[in-house]
Amino acid sequence: MRLREASPDDIAPIMEIERTPGHEQFIGQWDKAKHQAEMANRASRYLCAERDGVPVAFAIVEALDDPGGNVYLQRLAAAETGRGDGAWLIRALQDWVFAQPGAYRLYLHFSVENERGRRLYARAGFVQEGLERDVYKMPDGRRVSRYLVSILRPEWERRRQM
Image (cartoon, rainbow, N blue to C red; front, side, top):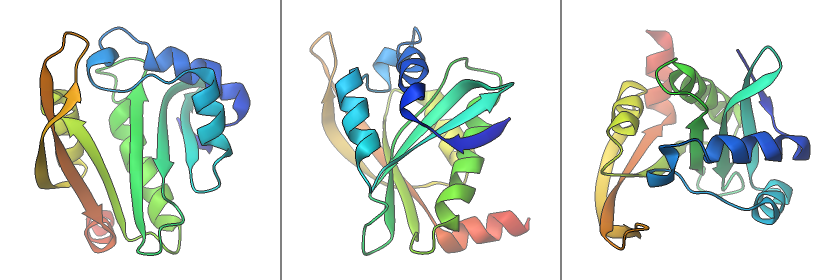
């Protein structure tokens, strides 16, 4: 696998990955115009993990211009679960983010119902910072809370030395 910055040509496969059955409960789904606008934002980057030239996972990071060095992981998704693509991508993403000179903290939110995500982020060294109650409104109308987790540059550096 390899990690690369995405281009506008990658929006269609990214949207396809977003719409993988089962993802609708845990990641957002944007339309093409929203992806184009976000991709054009200088403070955001789309990253694709590809195998044999085909995107199999992607991440969207935002706030690369944050003066405090807080980089936000907006979205991470893999086309197939259970293959290790998400685990590979989160490690590669951390390396990419912390290669940015101003990055100090990588953080994200995820649904309390996303057990697979909870395990992935914990294995990758993210620390739970809090619980935000009833943030998401699901298609069926119920409300779901989300966790806030982060990893700091010194924590990432220690993990890289292991």
